[in-house]
Length: 239
Image 1 (spheres, rainbow, N blue to C red):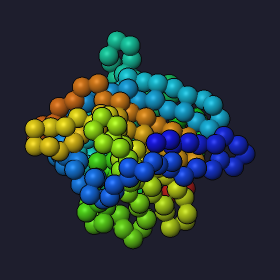
Image 2: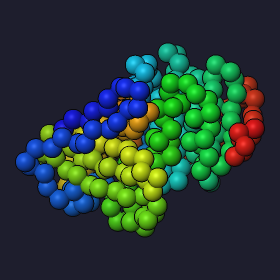
Image 3: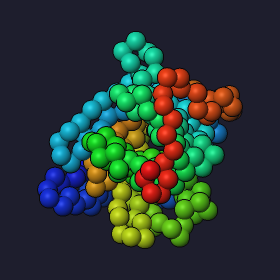
């Protein structure tokens, strides 16, 4: 399955290319493990329509659908910066400026667009809709409809299985999510080790290197605690 993005003056998402072995998408998505918490070491890569790209070592802390922390790591393993989303708030830390923006989680896309840099533009849809990477169709029905329309797709089987969601907002914006490289657990549920998010801004990819699935994570995990970063509030006005 190919997820293609054309780089032109007005980028357009091409439709998913599928073969004849498409199965019921909703049923296939229902095979995913519904976990309460995850901690993982991963590689995050991104590519913008402008051609800019990057790749980082990151550490993930996830309690879907409301809590996410991604830490960017230096070559020595220390934290260079992070995004924290919890309790309907976000903290976005820019390591180069030693600055952390804080605001309502519903406004994180506005901040990223205002930043205007390659990764921030590409990551706009990812940070706004990240719970969709881990949610079942039933969860989507409860948490996201009727605000967005979602189409489910499954292609291939076994080692070649890919699951995808096409997400269309009321405004007509379109985004593709793809999960692949699945690990089958003892109860026959599946956990993806690779994720892709494709939008008009570009593409985000995450590859899990190692992960654990605790029942929950310590409460301090989702409390902002970076030192030596200046904290600045972000409101709808962008101030």
